Amino acid sequence: MRPLLQATIAYREAARVALARRLANRTVDAEQRAVHGFAWIATSVAAMEAVAAWAETGGGANPLDALVAELAFAETLGQLTGALLMGPAEMLRPADLGLTAEARTLAEAAAPLLDADLAETRAALAAALAEGQWPSETLHDAELDEIRAQFRRFTDAEIIPHAHKWHLANALIPDETVRAMADLGTFGVCIPESYGGLGLGKLVMCLVSEELSRGWIGAGSLGTRSEIAGELIMLGGTEAQKSEWLPRIAAGETLPVAVFTEPDVGSDLGALTTRAKQDETGDWVIHGAKTWITHAARSDLMTLLVRTQPDTPGYAGLSMLLVPKPRGTEDNPFPAEGMTGSEIEVLGYRGMREYTMQFDGMRAPADALLGGKEGAGFKQLMQTFEGARIQTAARAVGTARRALELGLTYALQRKQFGQALIHFPRVADKLAVMLAEYITARELSYAAARAKDAGRRCDIEAGMAKLHAARAAWTAADASLQIHGGNGYALEYEISRVLCDARILSIFEGAAEIQAQVIARGLMAGRGSERVG
Image (cartoon, rainbow, N blue to C red):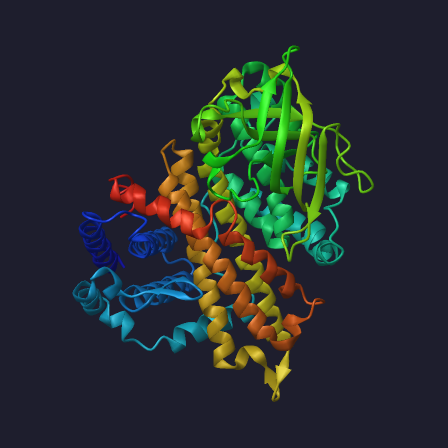
């Protein structure tokens, strides 16, 4: 594997040089396709590194690991040298970056793998899955493995049996389930023990998010709000704010909500217009509108990004407020004075509900300003981007795993022409490739989490993990639904929900295009080259 990795690293470096030539006289926006294509190339190389490291760490104890790595390498190299999938309708060909000759060189180095017929590899992986065998997932740490096992047991018992009916009813995750999740420590994974949390790292956060999302992305995503709020307060809050809010968040007593996005603004947070101004009492008075706010009604604390300096344009005029609010009910979702809201009906990603919100003189206490620092809101929020994107990658990994499980179960149970579907090569092939992509996305996510836990800046790694895992989740859900055939299109089948849930992953927490921009800008600026490759 290592010689092939070196060849792909050389190809990535050739792509970097080619892009630099293009950008010598052109802007990044003018060369967006080339810029984003380079990001996908770099992400693909990082994914190969992650899966190679995983396979090597196992030391050959599980023979399936080598088969997964072989298939993952073959699929990725085929895309790098042929057409790299950036989206369902977008493929990057080597010629798009002037890399035709370099692609041929890479193809020659990879010829033994690219020219091989991997039908037996795919068949062996599908057969192993049919027998209940899976590739290695141990983290070579008994405590980490037990955390995974604990949350898997919980998900199997408390989430999977109920998730689809909750989804169909557009019901909130029941309060008793939320309390059970809190008892497991879901909401305080990364909050220090001194503030009532578990004091663990982002790798554990990945395990928790992955397993809960395997049951239902809504369950895995419930912890996202606590993760973002906890990190915002831990990194930017005053000691009084930490002492007041972190223990409540860790215990699940306070359910926070992130209130950032506005209508017609999207990813351009510097254009936010919701404003807050202190009155003669010192309280903050809030006016404006927000949209796509997840879990807004059943929450107790808003981390609210507002403009407190109206004469200061862009990010510099933004501040972060910690705004307590009464928890809403089905009959009265927004009981606070000066706040109204309405639900946005969505295809999937249910369990918490999405809302638009309007503020017309809602008040927040004088000490609501995060860290007591005005104009620091965007910088404070940026500190959470890496963790949020790593967690989103983990949610995508869990979703991909569930899609694979559902496709496998259906392929074993459904018979056509006298035999189970899994015995048809096109079905078995889908399962094998889904498995390889799931493992690759998982290991890339873990690599990003380890970088974060090591205290390194990892916006590039986080962006790569999110970019790759979101694609893996969508392709797995789509392939699994195809295995289900017409039944997959019926609402009664769980895969219909998983498909809808998977689609959001390449949009929220920074759309795929935003991730590609972040990755490419960082690498072209010289950041990450010592870590990616």
